[in-house]
Length: 205
Image (tube, helix red, strand yellow):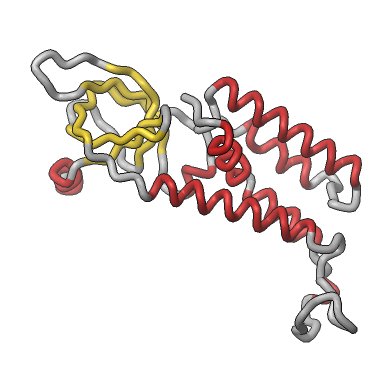
């Protein structure tokens, strides 16, 4: 399962929004926490309450934008093609590789420490290349926070001679064998949503 390069990079950057928030909090000048609000920063006695200028804020805004864009793209998908679920296996997200940069962020990593910060960027760059090339990019634990689950599903399109297809799929529903769902495809990723009839049946059980 593999997105194209630019959407892949957007999803990857957005997945590290919590890390950018941690680094922003570490970069904040807490001695200015109760200082009077002033605008615009950088004029007279009005200073930016960050130790390294606006770099940490720019990284934070970039990650936030990528996260919102990724979630918005998933939310706007309207699955309309009916499929029958034959098998559905939930795939847990890989946490170890994802959490390593967070561990690094608590090892005296600061934006003003150029060497460590560049090293972190190189590390994240290699992680992106590996996950992109291996098709594992969608194994993003942050999606779990927003209700998305990754499945390996075997499905078929209704017809006289249905052919079983096995692939990965994202869904907010708990997929079960023997259910009729709707599916849409973004590049190589299937987005599955239960039909209203199936959703009502599941809620009543």
